[in-house]
Image (cartoon, rainbow, N blue to C red):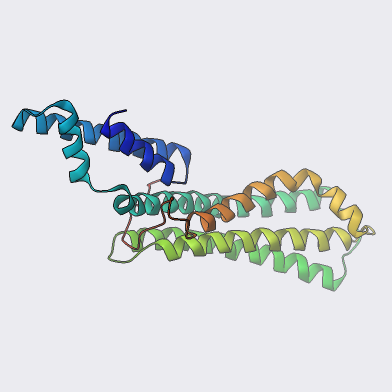
Length: 232
């Protein structure tokens, strides 16, 4: 195994995050190191092995460069998560409203039920706006001398809290429906079709938190320096 292959393999082992972005990073690093090694050979005429060794040494040790790459992966995950929530929450509100109207039997809901339904709609709108603001914050932090890691954690925590709040309000609304409602067990069983969607949203939020969590000495952890933000 060459020096470049060994270096790239160790960097790949230390990094965690979105697979496609990580794979692109690894390819970019490998290509950059090979170009650097070719330049060293052209200038000094050393052997290919020595040229690779010098290219790797100039690039920097893996423990020193991994945090910056890890930060970019964490920001990419937060960016995607915030986008999904900003778009999905209004859609959830629209779908539930249409389902409510389609299944309406003309029975007037209780004031408490109406207040909870209204509060849920307001919460979904506010949360969607909040995630849009977090997208702007990621841009702002990444383009100034401030680390976006805190915003990544905020995105993750907000995503997890939002999903749990949606699940809780859904259970209460199902149990107290004007048509007679149902038991907690019945509400849980009836909500099974929505479980994959909730699980996906919960996973996205939890992953933001996991990617910014301190790891062992064998893994990268986010840097406090700015990181570029994806455009989509």
